[in-house]
Image 1 (cartoon, helix red, strand yellow):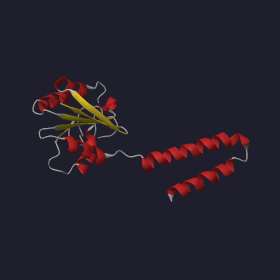
Image 2 (tube, rainbow, N blue to C red):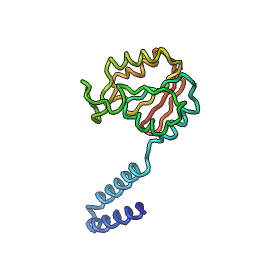
Image 3 (cartoon, rainbow, N blue to C red):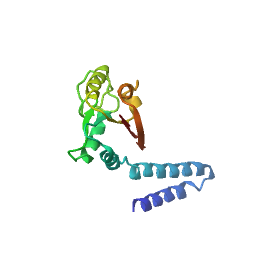
Image 4 (cartoon, one colour):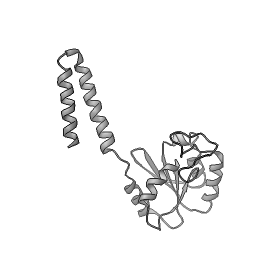
Length: 172
């Protein structure tokens, strides 16, 4: 239904603009942009159900899941309702982490990683034989890659997967 309406709107725009040959490239560019925008927002979604199922299938008792930025804990908590899902560590804290003396990057609930977060992570790593690291836009929230580097200093990387902008890695 929406696809049909979008097609009609684009064709009406093109019909009105194409009469002048100099407007043809503009009409084509607009049509392609509308199609790409529609596809991106209507069909492209991070598969949080699949990410959670992947972790649940491979998880072992004592695993730890670390997420950066902390806003990723929201879809993760929605789909990870099984009580056996590994312990979750949101850095720098549970979402929304407001009022911290930090740089807030994309929203007012997800600040940048700071050295005290690495100390918290280090303390948690000692008690967990395996760690799942989930990140999105880590270069914004953790520009020094300090979370990944700290995990890698204590555990070996076993595998990485990607779903759109979300990466999840297993370390043991």
